[in-house]
Image (cartoon, rainbow, N blue to C red):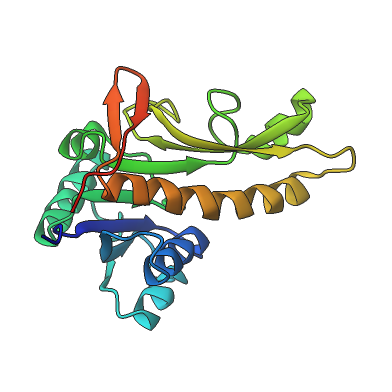
Length: 210
Protein backbone atom coordinates (compact mmCIF):
# COMPACT_ATOMS: atom_id res chain seq x y z
CA UNK A 1 0.00 0.00 0.00
CA UNK A 2 1.37 3.40 -0.95
CA UNK A 3 1.43 6.09 1.73
CA UNK A 4 -0.45 9.31 1.14
CA UNK A 5 2.13 12.00 0.32
CA UNK A 6 2.80 14.67 2.92
CA UNK A 7 1.78 18.07 1.57
CA UNK A 8 4.49 20.66 2.21
CA UNK A 9 4.15 24.43 2.13
CA UNK A 10 7.35 26.45 1.86
CA UNK A 11 7.28 30.05 3.13
CA UNK A 12 9.84 32.49 1.72
CA UNK A 13 10.64 36.17 1.46
CA UNK A 14 13.63 36.16 -0.87
CA UNK A 15 15.91 34.06 -3.05
CA UNK A 16 14.83 30.64 -1.84
CA UNK A 17 18.02 28.57 -2.08
CA UNK A 18 16.83 26.21 0.67
CA UNK A 19 13.53 25.94 -1.19
CA UNK A 20 15.47 24.92 -4.30
CA UNK A 21 17.43 22.36 -2.31
CA UNK A 22 14.18 20.78 -1.13
CA UNK A 23 12.81 20.74 -4.68
CA UNK A 24 15.99 19.02 -5.86
CA UNK A 25 15.79 16.46 -3.05
CA UNK A 26 12.19 15.59 -3.92
CA UNK A 27 12.98 15.27 -7.62
CA UNK A 28 16.00 13.07 -6.82
CA UNK A 29 13.93 10.81 -4.55
CA UNK A 30 15.73 11.81 -1.34
CA UNK A 31 12.39 13.00 0.04
CA UNK A 32 10.34 9.98 -0.89
CA UNK A 33 6.92 10.69 0.57
CA UNK A 34 6.61 14.47 0.31
CA UNK A 35 5.31 16.89 -2.28
CA UNK A 36 5.39 20.67 -2.27
CA UNK A 37 1.75 21.71 -2.32
CA UNK A 38 2.51 25.42 -2.54
CA UNK A 39 5.05 28.16 -2.09
CA UNK A 40 3.91 31.26 -0.19
CA UNK A 41 5.79 34.56 -0.22
CA UNK A 42 5.00 37.79 1.60
CA UNK A 43 7.00 39.67 -1.04
CA UNK A 44 5.89 39.82 -4.68
CA UNK A 45 9.48 40.34 -5.86
CA UNK A 46 10.90 37.21 -4.19
CA UNK A 47 12.97 35.19 -6.68
CA UNK A 48 11.68 32.01 -5.05
CA UNK A 49 8.40 32.62 -6.86
CA UNK A 50 10.23 32.15 -10.16
CA UNK A 51 11.78 28.93 -8.85
CA UNK A 52 8.30 27.63 -8.06
CA UNK A 53 7.00 28.45 -11.54
CA UNK A 54 9.92 26.61 -13.14
CA UNK A 55 8.89 23.44 -11.30
CA UNK A 56 5.11 23.84 -11.72
CA UNK A 57 4.58 24.48 -8.01
CA UNK A 58 1.68 26.79 -7.09
CA UNK A 59 3.28 30.14 -6.23
CA UNK A 60 1.15 32.29 -3.93
CA UNK A 61 1.67 35.84 -2.70
CA UNK A 62 0.25 36.96 0.64
CA UNK A 63 1.62 40.40 1.38
CA UNK A 64 1.61 41.52 4.99
CA UNK A 65 0.67 45.10 4.06
CA UNK A 66 -2.91 45.88 4.92
CA UNK A 67 -3.20 43.51 7.87
CA UNK A 68 -3.78 45.09 11.27
CA UNK A 69 -1.22 42.90 13.05
CA UNK A 70 0.71 39.64 12.92
CA UNK A 71 -2.24 37.68 14.26
CA UNK A 72 -4.50 38.89 11.45
CA UNK A 73 -1.89 38.04 8.83
CA UNK A 74 -1.30 34.60 10.30
CA UNK A 75 -5.04 33.91 10.39
CA UNK A 76 -5.17 34.52 6.63
CA UNK A 77 -2.01 32.45 6.15
CA UNK A 78 -3.44 29.49 8.06
CA UNK A 79 -6.60 29.64 5.94
CA UNK A 80 -4.51 29.64 2.75
CA UNK A 81 -2.47 26.65 3.89
CA UNK A 82 -5.61 24.77 4.89
CA UNK A 83 -6.99 25.32 1.38
CA UNK A 84 -3.95 23.47 0.03
CA UNK A 85 -4.19 20.60 2.51
CA UNK A 86 -0.81 21.35 4.07
CA UNK A 87 0.66 18.98 6.67
CA UNK A 88 4.16 20.46 7.05
CA UNK A 89 5.24 24.09 6.87
CA UNK A 90 8.89 24.80 5.99
CA UNK A 91 10.34 28.26 6.60
CA UNK A 92 13.00 29.07 4.02
CA UNK A 93 14.07 32.64 4.63
CA UNK A 94 10.59 33.80 5.67
CA UNK A 95 11.30 37.19 7.23
CA UNK A 96 8.37 37.30 9.59
CA UNK A 97 7.98 36.20 13.19
CA UNK A 98 5.11 33.77 13.48
CA UNK A 99 2.39 34.45 16.02
CA UNK A 100 0.74 31.81 18.23
CA UNK A 101 -2.09 31.71 15.67
CA UNK A 102 0.22 30.02 13.18
CA UNK A 103 2.25 27.96 15.66
CA UNK A 104 -0.86 26.50 17.31
CA UNK A 105 -2.43 25.67 13.94
CA UNK A 106 0.55 23.45 13.02
CA UNK A 107 1.97 22.04 16.29
CA UNK A 108 5.34 20.35 15.77
CA UNK A 109 4.78 20.74 12.03
CA UNK A 110 6.61 24.00 11.28
CA UNK A 111 10.33 23.70 10.56
CA UNK A 112 12.96 26.40 10.46
CA UNK A 113 16.71 26.39 9.89
CA UNK A 114 19.10 28.62 11.80
CA UNK A 115 22.77 29.26 10.87
CA UNK A 116 24.23 28.37 14.27
CA UNK A 117 24.33 25.48 16.71
CA UNK A 118 21.34 26.33 18.86
CA UNK A 119 20.85 27.22 21.64
CA UNK A 120 23.99 29.27 20.91
CA UNK A 121 23.60 32.50 18.93
CA UNK A 122 19.86 32.74 18.28
CA UNK A 123 18.34 35.64 16.39
CA UNK A 124 19.94 37.79 13.72
CA UNK A 125 23.58 37.85 12.55
CA UNK A 126 24.33 34.42 13.99
CA UNK A 127 27.57 34.03 12.00
CA UNK A 128 28.94 37.34 13.26
CA UNK A 129 27.85 36.43 16.78
CA UNK A 130 29.89 33.22 16.51
CA UNK A 131 32.97 35.07 15.24
CA UNK A 132 32.70 37.74 17.92
CA UNK A 133 32.48 35.08 20.62
CA UNK A 134 35.53 33.27 19.25
CA UNK A 135 34.07 29.79 18.93
CA UNK A 136 36.01 27.08 17.10
CA UNK A 137 32.92 25.49 15.59
CA UNK A 138 29.61 26.78 14.35
CA UNK A 139 27.07 25.22 12.02
CA UNK A 140 23.32 25.07 11.50
CA UNK A 141 20.24 23.71 13.21
CA UNK A 142 16.90 22.49 11.90
CA UNK A 143 14.26 22.85 14.59
CA UNK A 144 10.54 22.84 15.10
CA UNK A 145 9.10 26.30 15.59
CA UNK A 146 7.51 27.34 18.86
CA UNK A 147 6.50 30.79 20.09
CA UNK A 148 10.04 31.78 21.08
CA UNK A 149 12.95 33.00 18.95
CA UNK A 150 14.86 29.93 17.72
CA UNK A 151 13.84 28.03 20.86
CA UNK A 152 11.92 25.06 19.45
CA UNK A 153 13.01 21.39 19.72
CA UNK A 154 16.13 20.55 17.72
CA UNK A 155 15.72 18.04 14.87
CA UNK A 156 19.16 17.95 13.19
CA UNK A 157 22.43 19.86 13.43
CA UNK A 158 25.58 20.06 11.30
CA UNK A 159 28.95 21.29 12.52
CA UNK A 160 31.17 23.65 10.51
CA UNK A 161 34.69 24.60 11.66
CA UNK A 162 35.42 28.29 12.12
CA UNK A 163 38.66 29.16 10.32
CA UNK A 164 41.15 31.73 11.53
CA UNK A 165 40.57 34.01 8.56
CA UNK A 166 36.80 33.61 8.40
CA UNK A 167 34.51 36.55 7.91
CA UNK A 168 30.77 36.45 8.48
CA UNK A 169 30.40 36.05 4.71
CA UNK A 170 32.82 33.13 4.27
CA UNK A 171 31.48 31.31 7.33
CA UNK A 172 27.93 31.86 6.07
CA UNK A 173 28.79 30.35 2.68
CA UNK A 174 30.12 27.13 4.23
CA UNK A 175 27.22 26.86 6.64
CA UNK A 176 24.77 27.37 3.79
CA UNK A 177 25.98 24.22 2.04
CA UNK A 178 25.24 22.20 5.17
CA UNK A 179 21.82 23.88 5.48
CA UNK A 180 20.80 22.51 2.09
CA UNK A 181 21.81 19.00 3.12
CA UNK A 182 20.27 18.71 6.57
CA UNK A 183 17.08 20.65 5.82
CA UNK A 184 16.14 18.16 3.12
CA UNK A 185 17.09 15.31 5.45
CA UNK A 186 14.84 16.69 8.20
CA UNK A 187 11.93 17.09 5.79
CA UNK A 188 12.41 13.50 4.65
CA UNK A 189 12.36 12.27 8.25
CA UNK A 190 9.09 14.09 8.86
CA UNK A 191 7.53 12.78 5.66
CA UNK A 192 8.54 9.21 6.50
CA UNK A 193 6.94 9.45 9.96
CA UNK A 194 10.28 9.12 11.70
CA UNK A 195 10.12 12.11 14.08
CA UNK A 196 8.62 12.02 17.54
CA UNK A 197 8.72 15.00 19.92
CA UNK A 198 9.07 14.09 23.59
CA UNK A 199 9.38 17.19 25.72
CA UNK A 200 12.29 19.12 24.25
CA UNK A 201 13.77 16.09 22.52
CA UNK A 202 13.09 15.04 18.96
CA UNK A 203 13.48 11.28 18.65
CA UNK A 204 14.28 9.71 15.28
CA UNK A 205 12.55 6.37 14.98
CA UNK A 206 12.50 3.82 12.14
CA UNK A 207 10.42 4.90 9.16
CA UNK A 208 6.87 3.62 9.02
CA UNK A 209 6.48 0.81 6.51
CA UNK A 210 4.47 1.56 3.37
